[in-house]
Length: 254
Image 1: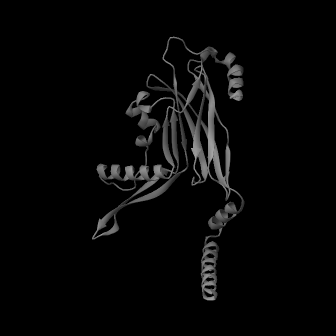
Image 2: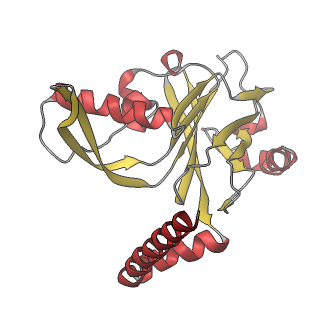
Image 3: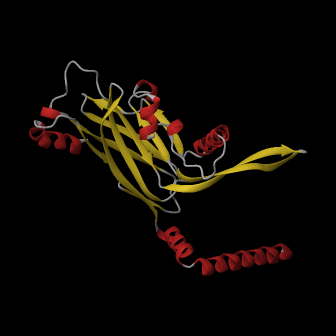
């Protein structure tokens, strides 16, 4: 927070000619390494709102902050199960071209009090406003059903969530929030996007990147799987056969 306060003090003289506020965001960790003992992490997202003239506007409704942390997009297929003759079978499926692997939203107030549905759709604010790009031209009601299934599946895994009211704003200038990163988080380039909102309009936005990557032995295994797919597959099969043989020998001796 001290860094954000210094940014506000240094930039204040330069803001007299600006007509719109500017966001100066930052995160506590730009790089997160996942090792075998990784049990999750907590990101602190903080920053400052720089107003024209270096002063918070008086006589106006206080501004709100919304922060969205997104993981890299990926193609995913969602399958729907149906019980037939007492057995659960795959009854249908829908593939999405670009679904975020992680999505966390935190805001100073509930989204319904900040912006309308159109603005939420434009900026993808909220789990009900994600643009998931289904690969097939399925009917709208079918897409909606599968989308709800995808969101619920990832919500249970801790990969999708919303935390309204979790952003703290101090003196109308400094803000902070915490976002939990689960142990099952995918690796890749994440983005933390901050929005400044007042009277239903987005006044300013800013983005910071976060890299989440494997380290140690996990990184070696992941790199081997990508660079030497055939050898990695053969090694995995050989290891499985060896472990099966060893388990059989142990059972015979016991």
